[in-house]
Image (tube, rainbow over all chains, first blue to last red; front, side, top):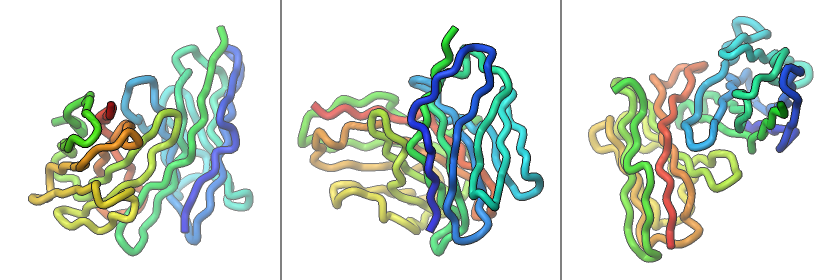
Length: 115
Length: 115
């Protein structure tokens, strides 16, 4: 069975300060992990994905995530928050199951950026 | 088209009415997923197709929900006798195939409101 847990439902940061959105996963084998962002009334956009090639993954808009197998974590970070980063963020795990490649979402973290 | 297209974007249905939601995946994508996203929640898996075969429908909440993808491209999610609890955004996603590490590409969703 595969699942993800997003540890914070809401995160609030000041503009220009670092962002940390936490995600822990559970998987019976080596997972594929993704972070998606959803702006209000917009579709889900892929930020980055872990493909097992490198544990530190760089994504769009200055976001990064580090895969830590020992901690079963895949936290999303950004050195300096921008107002446009305010959105809902979803951590997603996928893997091949009996019926193909499925994607399982966390419950989301709402990021607020304070000017 | 360049991305996953869903129609209509918005649908208001009277309770008891039947609705049909359409998804045009990215051309050539083998896998197609439907998700239901209630207000303030993460997307919940409904069903999954590989080409025209519906390999997993375990997430469909009741027998009022039905999905098809008869020619392995366009998919339709049908909800019969809509209820207020069906109000949600219905997201469609496609991905290239069954390989690991391939991300899902999402449409903008159909917002269904049952009154």
